[in-house]
Structures are given as C-alpha cells and as structure tokens.
Length: 225
Image (tube, rainbow, N blue to C red; front, side, top):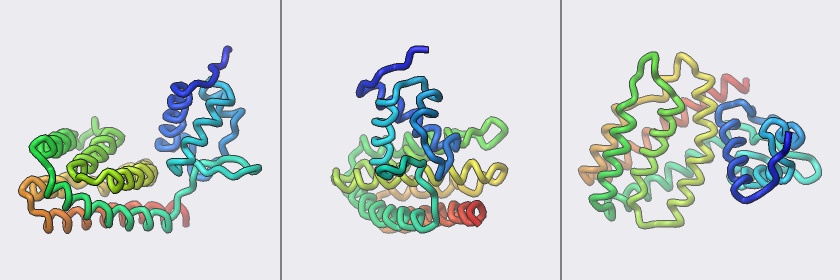
C-alpha cells in the first residue's frame, strides 16, 4: 500500500487524527508513540507522523524527549489543579470584559450556544462526545466578547489542555457520567451574563469550574491509586 508523503495539509490531518485518538483513549496517557506503529495505523509516511507529533507537543498532548522518544502526555492531579487554577483566574477577567464590551452579536452567540447545549437529550441516545463539543463551544462563546486577544488565546490553550482531562473522566465514569453535567447551572450562567450581572456571573462561573475540577479529580484519584 502506497504511503502518503508529507505536506502541511497532511500533517494537520494526521495531527487531528492522533489528537482525536488521544482524546478518546485509543492512545492512552503515558503510552509510548512509536513512529513505525503510527505509520501503519494512519497509512502515512514517517515525516508527517513526526511533524504531527511536534505539533501535538506544542499543545502539550504529547511529550517529546530528545534521544528517548515520544509519549502521550500523562494525566496527574497536580497538572489538573494548575490548569484549572489558571483557567478560573483568566475566565473571571475575560467574562467581566466580555459583559462590558459584548455587543448584540456576542449575546446571540451565547444564547445560541446554550440552546444547542440544552437540546441534547439525557436518554439512551445521549452522546457525551457531542455534549463535550457543545459544552466547549458554550464556554468559548461566553468569553469571546472580551476585547483581549492575548488573554483569550491563553484561555483557549488552557481549555484545550483541560479537554484531555474531561474526556479521560467521561470515559471512566460510564454510568455516572451525569456527575459532570449540570444544564441548570449553565442556564443560570447564561441568564446572568445576558442580564449584564457581571459579579454574580463571575461567581457562578468560578463555582462551576471548581466543581468540574473536583469531579475530574475524583476520577484521577481512583484511576491512579
């Protein structure tokens, strides 16, 4: 079978495939990534694999060590706490800025992203991966109205790293997945934001982020004990 050679577009495609396999747990935290194995798995040459792994090391999904190799980044309580502590600080500042500066277009984005999140049914058809994507977009929409490009990029980096932990927890919780779902809390955050009640919105968002961290932390403690 002919292997695909490297190109910027192919590298991005391979990077997304590896990233998705890390998120879904097909490539597990701490697992060594061998180029030869990945070539066979994704049917591409060595160059796009290596370039994709470098890209993923920038987003901290992959750990690279010269002369030693490459691994899926591990998960640990210390990093989780650090990520969420940083996220809580930057989210609070950005939310206040967004409420002050946000226009009608931003308000519509917040309302739309909440509506999409709330439309998911918690029954036998429920898909937690779809929830995670919509949940991610809701949190992004809350803060996009802030006129603070560099701070928003930092926020985006943080939630992309946290996404790996959330996926890890979702797969482990199985029947207890609803522990990470609270649509009522999201609705209240949305209403406070649209009402321009910045202080209460900031307080509730911080509480929401802390609660999410604690739920994921419980899973980590059980899985790494």
